[in-house]
Amino acid sequence: MTADRRNGLVVVALVLSLTVGVGLLLMLEPGDHRVERAPLLMAEQWGTRQVGTIEILYVASLADAGPLVASSGDDGVCVVYPTGLAEWYAGGPHVRMIVLGTPDQSRLPEAQQRALLGALRELMRRSGASDVRIYWTPPIGVTPEASWPPAAQELRELLVRKRLLAD
Image 1 (cartoon, helix red, strand yellow):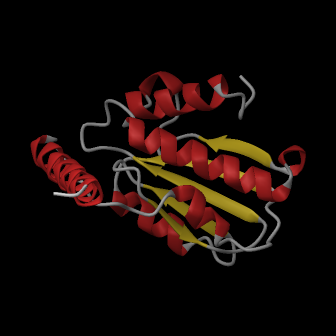
Image 2 (cartoon, rainbow, N blue to C red):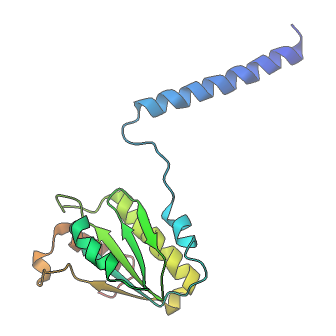
Image 3 (spheres, rainbow, N blue to C red):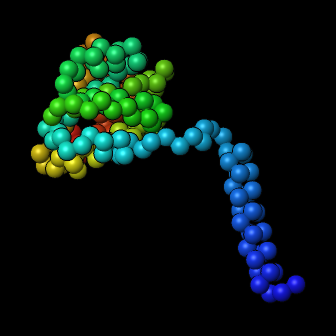
């Protein structure tokens, strides 16, 4: 066997072993392995529209989010699901970011936090961070902060910690 042939077989064997190894690791890994669109890429579809204000709302269920999306008119809407998926509806200079709660409303999932912060960062970058005003709307129908669901409290604390909202 010549050296070139032997080297070629070694390279082919390495590529096949790496491919099989990755396939086995993915089979052993729990969870879903579908690749979804990143919120940053979806925010780029916003185009060249300027965003002046971003309203962030926490809603307990998809049923509560429906009327908010329908009442947005020409404004933009972004619904951030607990899975980390962000659904965009492009619109005017006001963007309503709706963060959906989980059924138990105990915590904000890590994927949802990353999707929200990534989408906010991209919208602010496209419009010029100093010009965008971000404000928080308390959970609908819940007046005192102490009675907010834990996930809503965690969302507000996250936004304050990241200095997107004033304390």
